[in-house]
Length: 186
Image (tube, rainbow, N blue to C red; front, side, top):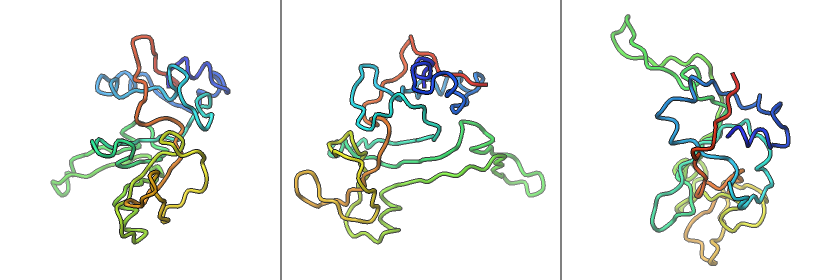
């Protein structure tokens, strides 16, 4: 989130403590193009009225890049991982074996959804598509059912649609601009 988003949130600056971020990690050049606001700059759609609440959960989403299906999500990770080597791991040389090991200092819990895993777990027979609730035309949060056949908006059922509530629009996020400062909480 940006500093302004934290300041203007329902919780205010005090709520920013739930979004840890060390400046030495946040200022890395390779990360800067990846930063996006969680709220729309122009007020935009906010079907769950979440834009002014500070999220703590980390959400990593890969929107579909398919020309034929620009509404769906390739995969989605909901997790408590911070952006750190301690949480994601670091490859280290194993002097004893001469091989490589992945050392993880702080284990975190997360859930990953992908069409392939849902297809396998639920024994589905049609292609699976993950859609975000509220931004693609779905009107309410409703029940999240991972293994039910949801009829497409046009009345067909060529896909099994799994709808997930996300607190932002994954397909049109606002990237940080020159005026946005990322929130720092050491």
